Amino acid sequence: MGNGVIDGFYNSRRLQERLGLLSPIEFEEKHCADQATVEQANLIPRQTLVPS
View 1 (tube, rainbow, N blue to C red):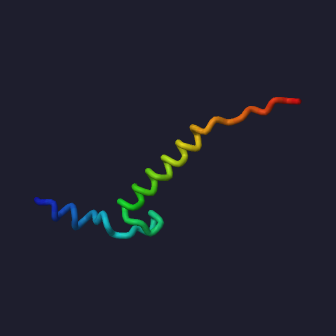
View 2 (cartoon, rainbow, N blue to C red; view 1 turned 90 degrees about the horizontal axis):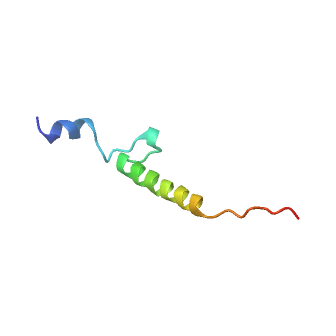
């Protein structure tokens, strides 16, 4: 059994409807970029409101 069996079953470039019509690789790249954006937003210090 070579890599051809895996490639025939799992196509990393084929668009997947359940992944928003992205390939698995594109979906993973988008997910990682989105996570980095969320992490950056969480690093921004929030200002506390001081009652006047």
